Length: 394
Image 1 (cartoon, helix red, strand yellow):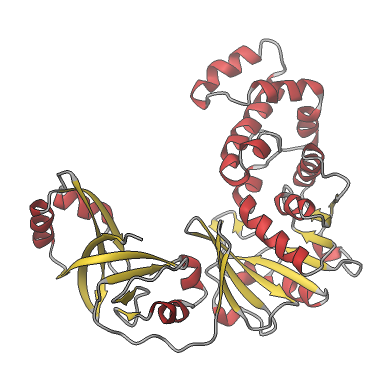
Image 2 (cartoon, one colour; image 1 turned 45 degrees about the vertical axis):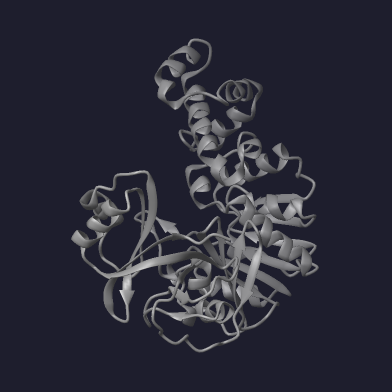
């Protein structure tokens, strides 16, 4: 845990001296860590100072997921920060559980307790299970620090040995990282996805958190699959049991817009119109581009590219709209001349279906001037193409 690798060291952080050190390090500057460490070691044991500094670093990293108020009261492990659900996503999931009438959840592979906290704040009682002693102790400390100890019971155990029969729902968040980084094979998760699915089938309701790149054919027939983005970034996929079997859903946070698939055929390919729409990543992962194209009265610019084009501007939460002024075959000299003529100095480069990197484009065309533009590098009917325009107004 940034230096805390055993229960003794963790317990020292929870003692009064450790708490005082953590309070003193709340706003410390990591660039000054050597000086801060030297000063603190004059009055505190070196091991405790090291553990407190490590925890302070983890808390600063966790602010992006949990917000400053919670992050600076919580306790983390390096894996806990890496694998924790962003608070907004955990809250969305907990609200869905509450809407299903769930009152008690077995949170298996609970980590440092981020999801348990979200569930408890939704008024749901939680059994949080993790097999790592330090991680389980961190979850217990987090429940206490956030005033949720009455709703969260933490148990250090192997999740495969837990009887979930008395719970309304199970939530499983298998470890998807190993010693060599991210794990892409669902059967290499810990525990494997197949075990999690069997655990889900035994409960009235269940939610299994999986990587958003999961193949659709790996989704069990009786499960609903939901892809969730936050601020435009796809964060996770969730397999829901006891909801809508076979449904495919894209949910966009923070607004909460949710689109459910209707099994539409792929949209037709058509010429580029006045507007180009870039669907949210969750829409693309959920294979719901056809549903968005239907809403927009549009079609695809290429059968393999998830850009929708249309002749009129329609508001939608599911895609970003660009007004297209120029359509050119891929040619950097022509692009540079056009941008110079229009005095474009602020250039946004986006790509889909192109091997060229945006930074390479900026370096080659050297934008200069008071105006701005967006260049979309893509394929149109199979041909490498540059679409020039900007975000659509309205």
